[in-house]
Image (tube, rainbow, N blue to C red; front, side, top):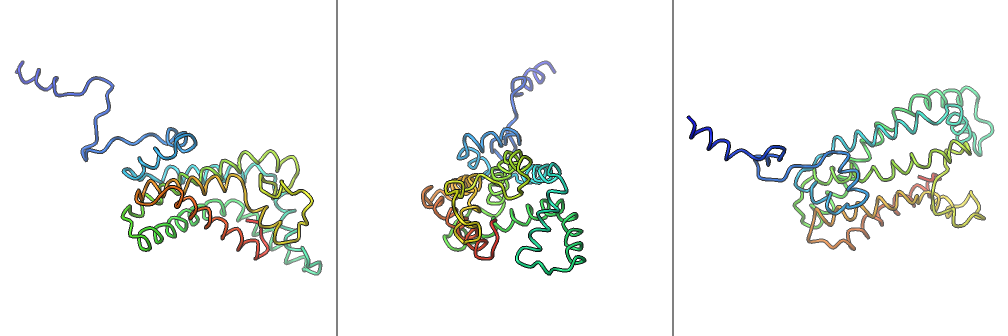
Length: 248
């Protein structure tokens, strides 16, 4: 019995040392640690997500931050913005139609961050998956792409949180750290303004980081090429929104 006890103690890992998973892969880091690595060492994070594609926690965190931002913006500021959007260029909109729109806005201001975040994460992931897996012959799989996208969405979402004091001070829901700040004299009614206003610095940062993610999930593709692709897709989306009359 003593010999059996001694052999089992010798085989056990030292106290406090992590036991490696049964599949032989390294243990994944915690969500807070992954958030830090996203900001300071994204390539290492995406190497981990390629092996352990965890996405639920990151996506829930994105939703939570988005809901926090929505909750901190005063309701009257949101309702006034919706009213202005509904009557912009259409002063003859019936009052009851405006009230219906405001009622919908009171509901969607909190539902939107949940549904929009989830749909956006899966849509972005699906587009990138199709491009790399079917168009380029990659073999990473959908879950690592979704995990990388979910984590990367934290960047623009945190950007929205950091921009919140500007919105609260100015009462302007469209206030953001966008490229139109470099050209303060531009007319707000043109396509150029809408495009530049939609190009948020945090959004561009997220597009670059997502390109880094794709280059780590698909090592045969260069980081430069992957970043060019994700930034180009970001610009195309913003341009389409600007053509449609929005600012993204």
